[in-house]
Length: 227
Image (cartoon, rainbow, N blue to C red; front, side, top):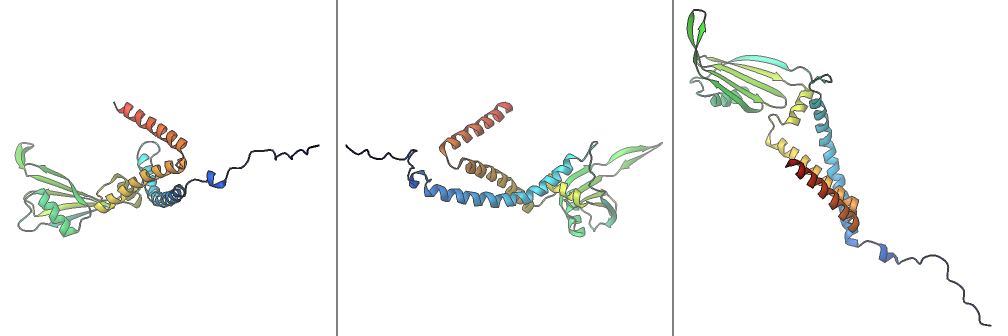
């Protein structure tokens, strides 16, 4: 009698480990992507806390759920003008910024020409009137001047910490440096979105196609809604 050979154990044979392992380049890229995502997320979290707090205050600046940011401290001062006096509101703004070390950049400038007015039975000529304003996150300054006077009236309002936060959010009187910081936050959010999608797909072909289809449909819906 011929002997019967033993049967092979039931179950599927395991594929070699090298056949299931992703390419080394993909593994290295995903590790690098995770580091970039984590560091950018840390920077975004720091600025996101600031923008989220100020955004909450802006959302509740009025209405029944109003959250007060505090009352500003107001100061008023009469400043004697140099001789000769400034010839235009812009010249007045430059002089005030140097003389009083006013914070912020000159903003709105108003120039009301002289015009006749009536006071009871009398008639007079109202002199030319200038108004110059400066804005910064920490304070707001306004200057008022009647052409021909030797003095200019300067009024400064110092904002509270919460009010300064909301001004930072709105971009009131910001320097170029802070504008660039906000640009890095916006770029970080975009980068987090892209790296997050890539980490979700793990560079898998099916997942990548699905992500492209989903993002493409969202973009198409936004474009369709704009037209």
